[in-house]
Image 1 (cartoon, rainbow, N blue to C red):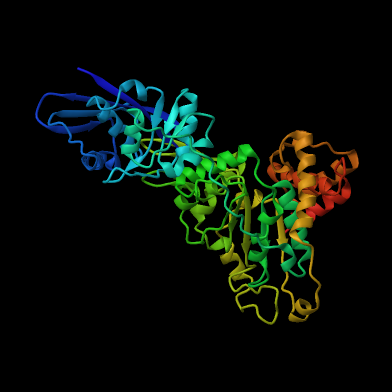
Image 2: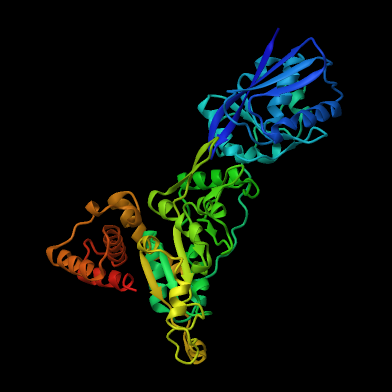
Length: 491
């Protein structure tokens, strides 16, 4: 009695977990039995596999076919088990030699005619195969994506028949090539925004140090326009960051053309988004918006309109840089180191402070409007800037401002100073990385006492001041840097 084995993977978040597909064909009443905590999509693979084999002119043997997905105590989800199950059956039927499959792991979904369809998490599967010193078999459309996971042998056939012919020596599948990068879409430029010099300065500081920022201003003042131009100030992702972000998008099935993500992502969910949509989870755990914004920007427009539970769920990821999703059957951790940018009106009517347009319920309408935003969440925001409405006359007469390219150069230089000094951006450093002169320390102490800053608030104040000093090419934090940081703190 022979048992054939084919390697594949389950996934905990974006981390691969080795799974072995064991196939046994024995005498008995015809049956196709699958065990090993398989979900609905996996159990349905029996019909897809059966149809794919029939399309190749191969009939399933009228025997008892037992498929075991080991280890049996891990829930198996997804359609990527189709290919390893089919290969295991072909080996058990002595159509494909078992020795040929010992050096490969396999992932892929089968269509009824035997074609291989794309699946999620191919990059993570490639990384898992590399850790096991094996190659990877995946759909042809994802051959270039699999190459991102490591320098391993990749077989990317268009269909099951081509793969079978390869193992039988009748044709040879060549190593796939990297998919050409798509043309980058142009990002909105900062010079399209007139005025708002204080807000632009806050945006530059936020970009240089990776700081979180809240913009407060009346409707139509330009808050969303500013936020949309933040990515144009940020440098490309490093190779390690690109791999992390690409793996997340591969896990979510959002990877375009199997090309790596090289620009910082910008995510802007609608304010009706639930807590699960923001943080991730669901019946089948998937990454949320904060993970899709990893190493990029998460922009929440109309901040008070989000549910309180959704906003409070952001507090821990803002500190730790990841999100742990606990379920009765699983515990999944996704990366979530994002730059938090938010915008809101000053009150419900949006015109508080404007004597001509504010409603008669001021200041009560402000209290009701901002009630969802808790003190602990505000304490995690580094920069708070107020945006004033620009008059039509100023809009017409004002000259064009600085371009994103020139501001991005300053941001890049400031980031290089940070990485050279402490190997991380200023938004991540702890207070013991920051040295202050006696005069500056006295000013920080007095300001913190007067503003009643928490220990976290004081640390974030010093981080912003350190970024301002880096933008000014200063070795130490001076009084001017602290004063400007305080200007973006006291609201």
